[in-house]
Structure formats: structure tokens, C-alpha cells
Image (cartoon, rainbow over all chains, first blue to last red):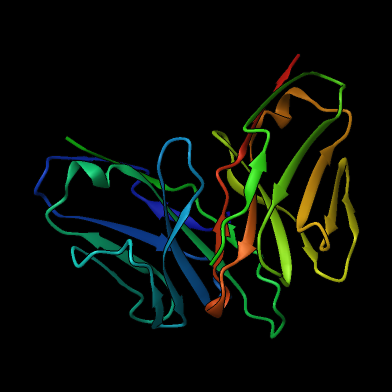
Length: 116
Length: 111
């Protein structure tokens, strides 16, 4: 399977613990995105990388959240001191810049986080 | 960045019927995308329509875009139970090619 993969698929943690999620994009894609989705809502943009550079961060991304893409390939999203409000599905997507304004994003299956 | 508003929020139809859902927005866009999300396959890109296009087809899907009314519609013809999913429109979010998703239309196709 050469699609976007995410690990783990499910994570249950206690409030106050740190968690880290991993995303492996489609190999030739230089753009990588993180989204958060809560029940009944559409995905909300969190952050965006072009290659290894983090170019945009949403105001939703508090200082407890940090994302990296060290070699321009896989990415990690870490949440420190988790809160119950962090419970959500965390989605990763990737795309290939083509010079046009089109931007079809390919999504991974997501990591479902439950904070107890 | 702006968020599209999908209508209706939920739709229930019999297998074989057509399903139509709409997305309205407020400010000019370069393109608009439709995505589908179900529990089995996650979030999947369906169609991208550019601002200079009025209609686009992909299999049983037909998307229209009316830039004067700032609205788009997604028509699924001859629906199947496997079409049961949430459908989202996604609008360009400004710089760096991000998109903003609406709250979605939840479609149930009854066999």
C-alpha cells in the first residue's frame, strides 16, 4: 500500500501525559498537513509542511502541540500535557506541489486519541 | 480562510435514487473540492472543480459550480449502499495550499 499511513491508529492516554503520533506521507509528496477532527465536524487545519519547513500553524495549535518533519519525509505530532479537550481524530494528509493552484490532498486513516 | 456551508446536514434515500447536496461560500475561490468520509476508507478526495469550470463528472458523480451564486452542488446518481458516508466541500484557505472543510452532509443510502 503506497498511501498515507499513520501510527498508531488508536491511542488512549491519561490527562497530563504526552503523546506522539507519526505520519508517513506518499513518498514523492513534498507537502504534508495535519488536521484535527471532532465528532460531527469537518477536519480542522492544524499545520502544514513543505519539505522539512513548517510554513503555517493554526491558532488551534497551542504551545502544547509541536510538529516536526525532520528530513522532509515522515512527520510527528506531539501533544504535551494532554487535556480531555484534545480527544479527537488526528488526520495527516499529503500532496504534491505542481505549480498550479490545485491541491488534491491524500489523507491517512487517522489516529484516534482518547484522553481520560 | 472561509468555511463552506453544506446543505442538507443529513440526507436519507433509497438505493437507486439520486442524492444532491450543496455547498455555499462567501468570497471568491480558485477551486472547490469535494471529499467523502466513511468508516471503512477514511477521507477520500472525489472531485476538484476550478472557478472557470461549470460542471465536472466522475463516474456517478456530477459537480456543478456557480460562481455568481457562490455555490456548488454534488449529485450522486443511482446511489448504492456503499455511498453511505459524510460528504464535505473544501475551500482553498489562502496561502500554502491549505483547505478548509465544511461540517459535511451525512448521507444514508438504504438498501
